[in-house]
Length: 404
Ligand code: FES
Image 1 (cartoon, helix red, strand yellow):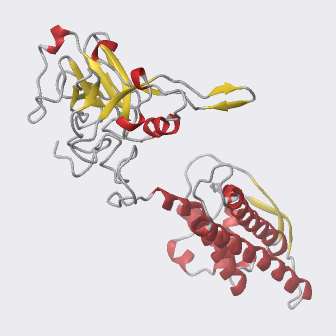
Image 2: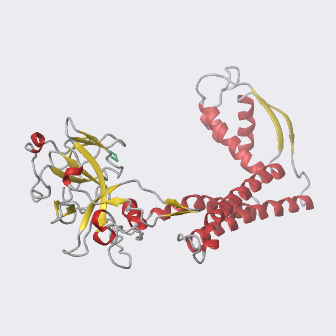
């Protein structure tokens, strides 16, 4: 920064200088020429200065108020989903716009406040500086600090206590408003929801649509037909549309994999139980949308099935050559969608974890450290594939409750 012709100062000399002197030397050392400088309010007690201070204060106060309004909206505004025709739909649909509006106005007000402050109080100045290569000398570093101090002093913010307070408060609240929504990601994993078990389990993270309410509950392995609502005249209807159907072992060829979802006995509407007047579509979609419900049903080639090494306690979880593993990756929960029949590996496309389908879904490669939970399966008296019990460990990313 500094050139060699400028006088060198000892540490003692520098320590004895005032901030003003250091700032002046810093300007010279940096070869800065102040071409123009004008104080905004050269006369003390200028009424225009008071007015300017009030205006800036109002903007900062508005920023704080809108940030608080954002937080209040986030906590208290009715946010739970309301469908068409349901009471409270109007107010619910304003939830997201209100969040955007209050957050936007808070940041905008803060921006106005800062811009106005700069325009009204920081001296007008035009400076020109030549630039140099190489590192800075000690004197440059010290004088830079002095220059920054000088900027703080000349900005007059230091002596405007009220303005300083409100600016700090509004900046802190606007910052808080930005990180506040992270609170929505915090969930109590032990908290059960009210009501019976359903396709979302009981609300805790270690239950799913496969969790049986009691021994007698029958849950089929449901194949997703991708059926959607059908048009009847002017309107679409889901009456008589079956999204999930029961599967028999012969529906899957050897060396194939299919994603299946839990299908409760009372929601079956296919085959000999089909009723064109029934509407089970919503329940089937709940099953598909259950975050821990997707299961990979794999039919191994018989030659490969002979090589399977069962995990202790899971010896009877398979049905013949059929194995069912949770599709939720034990790393951070992506769907482990790829099954490579040649190697019998299950691949997660997110971070390339690989699991061995011949060894109880044990991880072989990648960041996942735990085996894919295995769902016990069998066939019922009619020959349909059903769950023979619950997962014996939580589904999904690493839980401290997991022993393996
Ligand atoms: S989520 Fe599967 S490897 Fe990361």
